[in-house]
Image (cartoon, rainbow, N blue to C red; front, side, top):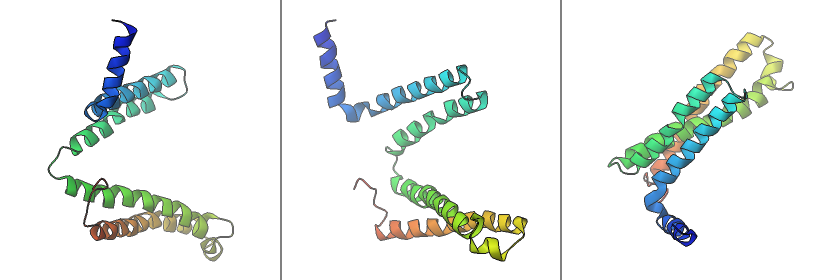
Length: 152
Protein backbone atom coordinates (compact mmCIF):
# COMPACT_ATOMS: atom_id res chain seq x y z
CA UNK A 1 0.00 0.00 0.00
CA UNK A 2 1.38 3.38 -0.96
CA UNK A 3 1.74 6.37 1.29
CA UNK A 4 -1.09 8.15 -0.56
CA UNK A 5 -3.46 5.29 0.22
CA UNK A 6 -2.66 5.55 3.92
CA UNK A 7 -3.20 9.33 3.88
CA UNK A 8 -6.58 8.87 2.20
CA UNK A 9 -7.63 6.31 4.81
CA UNK A 10 -6.65 8.70 7.60
CA UNK A 11 -8.59 11.57 5.97
CA UNK A 12 -11.66 9.37 5.54
CA UNK A 13 -11.38 8.18 9.12
CA UNK A 14 -11.46 11.73 10.50
CA UNK A 15 -14.24 12.77 8.13
CA UNK A 16 -16.36 9.97 9.58
CA UNK A 17 -15.26 10.70 13.15
CA UNK A 18 -18.81 10.50 14.56
CA UNK A 19 -19.03 6.88 13.46
CA UNK A 20 -15.51 6.10 14.66
CA UNK A 21 -15.70 7.73 18.10
CA UNK A 22 -15.77 4.39 19.88
CA UNK A 23 -12.57 3.25 18.15
CA UNK A 24 -10.75 6.45 19.05
CA UNK A 25 -11.90 6.05 22.66
CA UNK A 26 -10.79 2.41 22.78
CA UNK A 27 -7.40 3.38 21.36
CA UNK A 28 -7.04 6.15 23.94
CA UNK A 29 -8.02 3.73 26.70
CA UNK A 30 -5.47 1.16 25.53
CA UNK A 31 -2.76 3.83 25.43
CA UNK A 32 -3.60 5.03 28.95
CA UNK A 33 -3.61 1.49 30.31
CA UNK A 34 -0.26 0.80 28.67
CA UNK A 35 1.18 3.98 30.22
CA UNK A 36 -0.05 2.97 33.68
CA UNK A 37 1.70 -0.38 33.41
CA UNK A 38 4.87 1.32 32.21
CA UNK A 39 4.69 3.57 35.28
CA UNK A 40 4.26 0.44 37.43
CA UNK A 41 7.22 -1.22 35.73
CA UNK A 42 9.46 1.75 36.56
CA UNK A 43 8.21 1.82 40.16
CA UNK A 44 6.38 5.14 39.98
CA UNK A 45 2.97 3.70 40.95
CA UNK A 46 2.15 0.58 42.95
CA UNK A 47 0.42 -2.59 41.78
CA UNK A 48 -2.97 -1.84 43.33
CA UNK A 49 -3.23 1.54 41.56
CA UNK A 50 -2.21 -0.01 38.24
CA UNK A 51 -4.88 -2.73 38.54
CA UNK A 52 -7.50 -0.23 39.71
CA UNK A 53 -6.86 2.10 36.77
CA UNK A 54 -6.80 -0.82 34.34
CA UNK A 55 -10.33 -1.70 35.44
CA UNK A 56 -11.47 1.93 35.77
CA UNK A 57 -10.47 3.28 32.33
CA UNK A 58 -12.87 1.20 30.18
CA UNK A 59 -15.92 2.02 32.34
CA UNK A 60 -16.47 5.62 31.12
CA UNK A 61 -16.23 4.45 27.51
CA UNK A 62 -18.84 1.79 28.15
CA UNK A 63 -21.21 4.18 29.92
CA UNK A 64 -20.82 7.03 27.42
CA UNK A 65 -21.12 4.86 24.33
CA UNK A 66 -24.13 2.86 25.49
CA UNK A 67 -25.65 5.78 27.39
CA UNK A 68 -26.13 7.70 24.14
CA UNK A 69 -28.11 4.85 22.64
CA UNK A 70 -30.54 4.25 25.51
CA UNK A 71 -34.20 5.24 25.56
CA UNK A 72 -33.92 6.61 29.07
CA UNK A 73 -31.41 9.37 28.44
CA UNK A 74 -33.44 11.90 30.39
CA UNK A 75 -33.41 9.76 33.55
CA UNK A 76 -29.69 9.10 33.18
CA UNK A 77 -29.11 12.83 32.72
CA UNK A 78 -31.10 13.56 35.91
CA UNK A 79 -29.03 11.07 37.89
CA UNK A 80 -25.82 12.44 36.41
CA UNK A 81 -26.71 16.09 37.01
CA UNK A 82 -28.08 15.73 40.54
CA UNK A 83 -25.80 12.94 41.76
CA UNK A 84 -22.42 13.37 40.17
CA UNK A 85 -22.34 17.12 39.54
CA UNK A 86 -23.96 17.77 42.91
CA UNK A 87 -21.32 15.62 44.63
CA UNK A 88 -18.48 17.39 42.80
CA UNK A 89 -19.78 20.87 43.68
CA UNK A 90 -20.47 19.71 47.25
CA UNK A 91 -16.88 18.47 47.55
CA UNK A 92 -15.51 21.75 46.23
CA UNK A 93 -17.69 23.68 48.69
CA UNK A 94 -16.60 21.34 51.49
CA UNK A 95 -12.92 21.94 50.83
CA UNK A 96 -13.41 25.71 50.67
CA UNK A 97 -15.78 26.10 53.63
CA UNK A 98 -13.96 23.50 55.71
CA UNK A 99 -10.78 25.48 55.40
CA UNK A 100 -12.40 28.90 55.87
CA UNK A 101 -14.64 27.93 58.81
CA UNK A 102 -12.77 25.13 60.59
CA UNK A 103 -9.14 24.36 59.76
CA UNK A 104 -7.48 27.72 59.05
CA UNK A 105 -5.59 29.27 61.98
CA UNK A 106 -7.92 32.28 61.88
CA UNK A 107 -11.13 30.26 61.31
CA UNK A 108 -14.06 31.19 63.59
CA UNK A 109 -14.85 27.60 64.66
CA UNK A 110 -11.20 26.93 65.45
CA UNK A 111 -11.24 29.80 67.91
CA UNK A 112 -14.69 29.03 69.37
CA UNK A 113 -14.34 25.23 69.63
CA UNK A 114 -10.99 24.28 71.10
CA UNK A 115 -11.61 20.51 70.99
CA UNK A 116 -9.94 19.15 67.85
CA UNK A 117 -12.11 15.99 67.80
CA UNK A 118 -15.31 18.05 67.76
CA UNK A 119 -13.96 20.25 64.97
CA UNK A 120 -13.11 17.11 62.98
CA UNK A 121 -16.61 15.74 63.45
CA UNK A 122 -18.14 19.02 62.34
CA UNK A 123 -15.87 18.97 59.29
CA UNK A 124 -16.96 15.42 58.41
CA UNK A 125 -20.66 16.24 58.89
CA UNK A 126 -20.25 19.27 56.66
CA UNK A 127 -19.52 17.05 53.60
CA UNK A 128 -22.88 15.24 53.28
CA UNK A 129 -24.73 18.44 54.14
CA UNK A 130 -23.02 20.40 51.39
CA UNK A 131 -23.45 17.54 48.90
CA UNK A 132 -27.20 17.48 49.57
CA UNK A 133 -27.41 21.26 49.17
CA UNK A 134 -25.40 21.15 45.92
CA UNK A 135 -27.56 18.25 44.65
CA UNK A 136 -30.70 20.28 45.37
CA UNK A 137 -29.27 23.26 43.50
CA UNK A 138 -28.49 20.98 40.53
CA UNK A 139 -32.04 19.59 40.74
CA UNK A 140 -33.48 23.11 40.56
CA UNK A 141 -31.24 23.98 37.59
CA UNK A 142 -32.27 20.79 35.76
CA UNK A 143 -35.94 21.38 36.50
CA UNK A 144 -35.66 24.96 35.21
CA UNK A 145 -34.11 23.67 31.98
CA UNK A 146 -36.83 20.97 31.80
CA UNK A 147 -34.10 18.32 31.93
CA UNK A 148 -32.91 19.03 28.40
CA UNK A 149 -29.60 17.45 27.52
CA UNK A 150 -26.71 19.86 26.96
CA UNK A 151 -26.61 19.09 23.23
CA UNK A 152 -30.26 20.05 22.68
